[in-house]
Length: 333
Image (cartoon, rainbow, N blue to C red; front, side, top):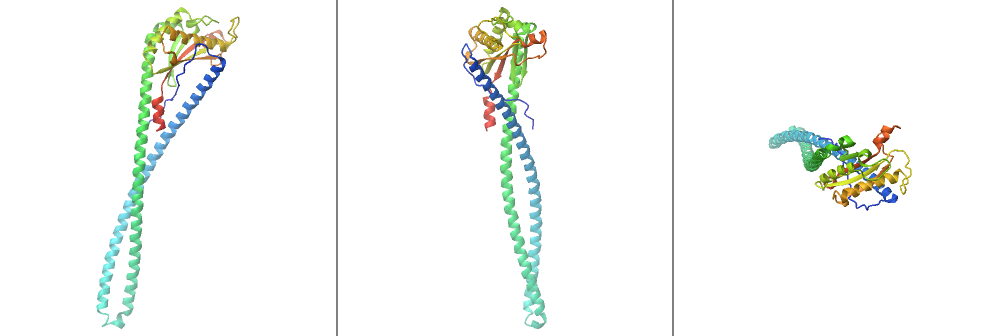
C-alpha cells in the first residue's frame, strides 16, 4: 500500500470587498490557520486509515492460518471418533457373544462381563465427550469463518477507498503540474523581472517581486506588473476550479510618509487588495474566487539583515488552491 504523501486542503470561497479592515484580516488569518490544522488532522487521519488497513491485513492472515489449524484438528478428531466408533462396535459384538455364553459360564465370566460393561460405558462417555467437542469446534469454526468474511469485505472496501483517494491525489497533482506548465508558458517573459512559480503542499505559488509590481513604499501597480497580471488572469479564467489567495509581503523597514498607510500591515494589505482589484476589474477574474491577505514583514523568504534579503522579502504571492471537496467526501466514508 502506498503511503499517502500529499497534503489535503480545503478553502472556502469568500467574497472580499475592496477594502479589508484589520479585524477582518485577523479573522481571515485565524480561519486560514484553522484550515491548516484541519489539513494536518486529515493527514493524521489518512495515516491512521493506512495503519488500520495494515492491521486488518495482518488479522486476515492470522485468521486464515488459524482456520487451517482448525480444519486439521477437526479432521484428526473425526478420525479419532471413527476409530472409537469401530472400537465400540467391536466391544458390542464381544458383549453380545459374552451374553450368549453367559448362562453357560455365568460364574466363570461374571467378572469379565462387568469389566467389558465398564469399559463400554467409559468408551461411550468418551465418545459423547469427543462428539460434543467436535460440534463445539465446528460452531467456533463457522463463527470464525463468518468473522473472517466480514473482515475481508471491510478490508476490500477500505483498500478501494484508499486507492480512490490516491488516484484523486495523483490526478490533482498532475493537474497542478499542468497548471504550472501553462503559467510558465504564459509568464515566461517576466521570469527575469522577479517572477517565480512553484508547487508547495498541493498549491501553486506565483510569486511576483515588488521590482515587477510596485515602486518601493507605493501601492500603485506598475505597467509591467499589470501586463503580468493580465497574462495570469487569462490562465485563471480557464481554470475555474481554483480558489485564489493574494498575499502581500513587505520587508522589516518601517514605512514613512505614506498618508493613511500606517505601517507594513497596512501596506501589505493595500497591495494585495490592489492586485485582486486589477485581476477582477481588468482581468475579469470572478471576485468571488479571490481573497486578499496581508502578511506584513513576518513571513520573510530571507531573514538576513541585508538589502538583498529585504528585496527578496518585498513580494506579492498569488496562491492557487484546488478544491478538495471530493477528497473530503472519500475521507468521510
